[in-house]
Amino acid sequence: MAKISQIEEFVAQARRVGAAGLTICSSGNLSWRVPDSDEVLLSGTGSWVPELTADRVSVCRLSTGEILNGVKPSMESVFHMGVMRQRPDVNVVLHFQSPYATAVACMADAPHNLNFTAEMALHVGEEIPHIPYFRPGSPELAQHVVEALTDHNSAMLHKHGQVVCGASYDQAFERAMFFEMGCRIAVMCGKNVDPLTPAEIADLESYFLGKEGK
Image (cartoon, rainbow, N blue to C red; front, side):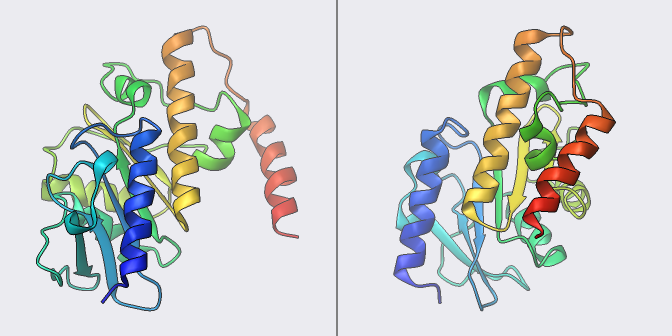
């Protein structure tokens, strides 16, 4: 079973997400793969991520979804665990509803190109899948999120919110924050924007990702 210290760190990271304005009240949910185990920690169903407490953290068996500590996980736990099963490199999944990103998710004609800065292209993803509206917690939503994040690190859920994943708490948090930043630019600038060109993005990836690989 997950250690008390791991649950305490999970709670601290959930509150960090809330403090940054990525979730409010009961919106959003967070999960983390417990190292060297078949366990995952998830925010409990109905819990407030910004005020999460240890007794509202669910411990589940990743391979089967079995609840191990009696705390029911978020209704979106199916896609959290589904993403982790598909991607061994993913240890954190964050579903959030930040102000500007959710405003974009509710647009009838939402922009699909948010590559306004280097951070968007490098961290959030050059292409962000847009998932049509499905009822929150539905099998259809879970299926589409898992499929989208099989080869992407972020997704926009129409009339709902956003999902990002990462190898660590910091990586998922960074992606969520830059996602919100890109959407803030889209809302504030409207059509008066000038996204990076494919050549400019390729140059960024060649320089920054190439350096990281050395």
